Image 1 (cartoon, rainbow, N blue to C red):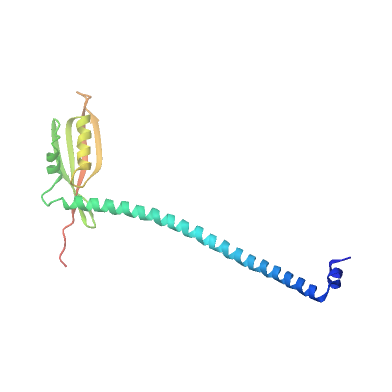
Image 2 (cartoon, rainbow, N blue to C red; image 1 turned 135 degrees about the horizontal axis):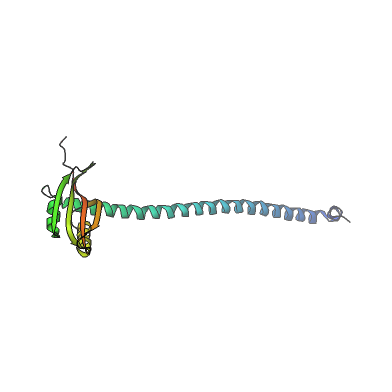
Length: 178
């Protein structure tokens, strides 16, 4: 006997209740399917937003680092006066070697910044004095860029170095009245 024949043999009230049960089951299946689709879409949205938030957090950190670097450069630029020069900076550091020579060079102009450049030659430095010179230039109060460095050992004393540095002191550009 088939399922259809059994269904037809049932009383009308039982058949009605069975129809309602089947309709309720179909309705539950449709509702479940719709909810499942909605949950899948929300999950995709959540994953997408998490990825966006992760990227934004990285960008926020990079922005903070860049802002701190810019603030540090701004503070160092504000310490520079019009009378400052590379020669004065080298004299303040106090590392002279056997002899030193400073020649002015043409510096670049960038938006808001002017470079005061010079070629500095110092002969007869020890390796420790060279490291101290570079450290004091980099970590000093004034913003300095070492554009080129050339180190040579001396023929007569291999423990000593002859150093040629192209150094640019960064100065704020003069403000134009408009």
